[in-house]
Length: 346
Image 1 (cartoon, rainbow, N blue to C red):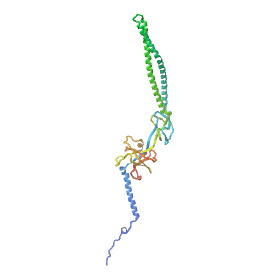
Image 2 (image 1 turned 120 degrees about the vertical axis):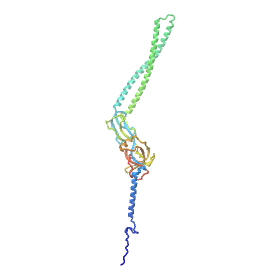
Image 3 (image 1 turned 30 degrees about the vertical axis):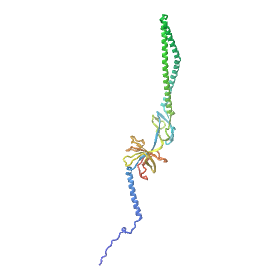
Image 4 (image 1 turned 135 degrees about the vertical axis):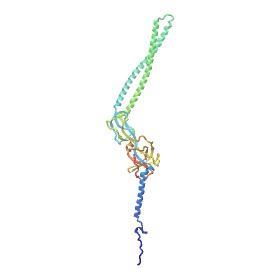
């Protein structure tokens, strides 16, 4: 009986003429693309900061404050937060009893000074009027004494007449010396009083200008950012009432250290907030700050990087609102937004 030779059956998946479905190819391409994208994303998340700038920032603007230079009470604030103001615009009205008392005291002292000045001028005119007569009297008395003494050798001059002539000359010279001294002292006192009066007038004018009837005016063109005191609040000298911000905004951001990249003035930057992107240029790189801006201290705690950069927006862009947090990165990094570190817009 013949034994048949067994043949191995070819498995379907090993068939030589089987054509790979296009669907499987597409799935594999998507799979590999996903793996590559995930690797790129992980590299961007954990290693991107070592190769290009990626940091945090905040939108800011140059700040100014409306404050008083004297103790005052807030009577009325005439602008609201967010209102636009111009330089010199009246924004608040205050009152100060200290300034009122100072003006009254200076005015009273000025009136007394004017009275004394008038009296001295009258006295000076009197001295000037009689000093010429005193000089003539002294000359006549001296001439009389010389003539009488010429009779002394002949014995026709009584002793009492000579004594009277000497006493008359002495008194005339004494009166002339007193009038001359008084004339010089009067001139110095009048000059001093006039200088003091001019200084007092200048001080009163400056105090009135400073007080401005209690009006406080905006020092810049800008926007009212914060109201720091309410009606009726008593302000100390230098205490701010309103915080103002200029219209031109910029980004203040941290500059990370220890990376494999360099940052220079003029480098292009992309700032992101939400789904919006903004472009700008590094305008200034600040030195390491001993004390960071207050906005940063409130927003970042703790802070382990202290070097700051300022970024200006490109023209034609509408900058985000003040104090918006933004994420900044170098302009040559990923063309799409992945997850750069968050930043602040000033």
